[in-house]
Image (cartoon, rainbow, N blue to C red; front, top):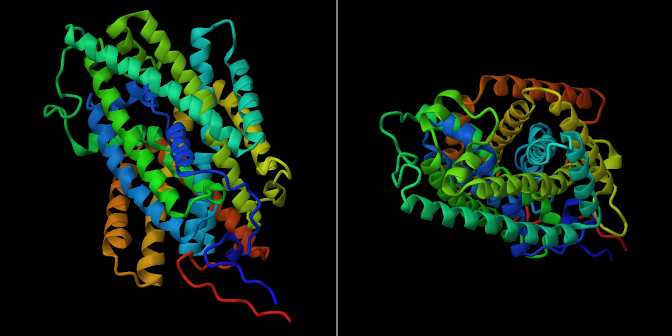
Length: 473
């Protein structure tokens, strides 16, 4: 008699448990916080300040609300399908396998490109601190270091994450305390709330246009879903850790950007001329307490983006490639798991190679950081739109749920907010994103014409009964 797999287990979907289940809720929460980077606004503060007309704190608050609806949809789909693959798995099983392929293709813009973006930003920042070491050498160093850590296993990655998170929070605490004291002493322009609301410049299109930039700081909470097969707790832990990480990080983003906006030396110039060198936050730190704080915040940004954030980004990317390869929608060699470390080794190495090549190429372009940022954001936002649709189709239509808040209203609100952000996004990002989508459609058509139509086995959700296969003997 053949033992039947438990409903909702990975085996009930036709997969073997190959990755090591060792991550707790706290590990997942730390992973999400490190992926988002608690000090992420340090690096793009000037761009968001310019785009929002100075209302940078409001921009991050709106971004947090928008992403919270997305996190709620992630939580619902993670409960239904507790496996690696993120939106690729959720759309493929919640709607249809071809839709899942296109969702996975679009999220690749985020997952595959973001490590290269992080390495590039960190390399530029470190080069500004140590000009004698070229950007390309910093790139190589960060890639090699992160690949070595990820190669040793997810437990090592989790331990490093905790150390890096504590370091980032310490730097942030220093800036907040010193900034508050500086404002109390009369530095900057004193305490006011123009960074939250300025009636002279406010418009929703202005704010949502800036949100399309600020959303880069929030990307990462969704990466928690790629670790579903390494989560040792219940499937609910995935959703809870996403919501908690987003709420904590979003609050930190609002506080730090509000303080920094009050310390900007020339707000009018920053709005009119932008921040081409990416130093606006460090200039604000310099106003608060001199060169030492400017150097500390710049160095923290470089290490956080180039090591901590890119470390978890590489791990998430490798899990997405692994999930798609396991379903024969990418080359099968990417599904190989290291027998001892229990990590998708080939996917990890490929991510490293692509990130290095991409970072080196974009470093040779004047618009490298801007171009990569636009593509990453567009890929993530369009994929999140598909996620919200997946919740409605799977729960409301397919399973006839009557939980209208979680399965209709919340996804609809999240979809509407993100759609408005996408519409107000940079035109170049829209064009490049749709070109990438067009390529994905061509690839999908090729799969269909060659008889390799995307198919996912055992598509039942974890909270549905799984039909028992015929018994032998």
